[in-house]
Length: 136
Image (cartoon, rainbow, N blue to C red; front, side, top):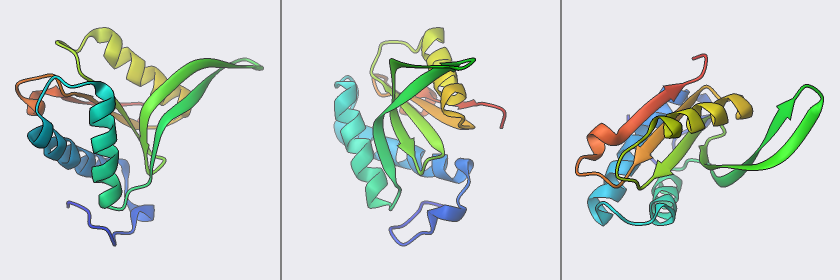
């Protein structure tokens, strides 16, 4: 179900959107290869997803709310696709537990259900895309 430009994303669910994100990530990875800066992959992924007709917001500020206190503490998620799916982009030797926790925290703070953690600095992108759910 690879989306085209005329698709109606208002009815798409998170899992359908992640299918498109994965396809776009593979296209970017195959074109650019591993080991570049995260910002390069972010820009290319935005381009590919917009070509498919997805609404993309990048470097989205996420406040931390505790009780009645709202703090703008500088959390920024990499991509928010169709206001439903968070994408965190990495270009690191190894994904660490802290990267998984970071995405889960963003999902909770932004009240989103599903995110993808993608590490482009790898020999096999297939094994470097992690799906993380928040009460899905």
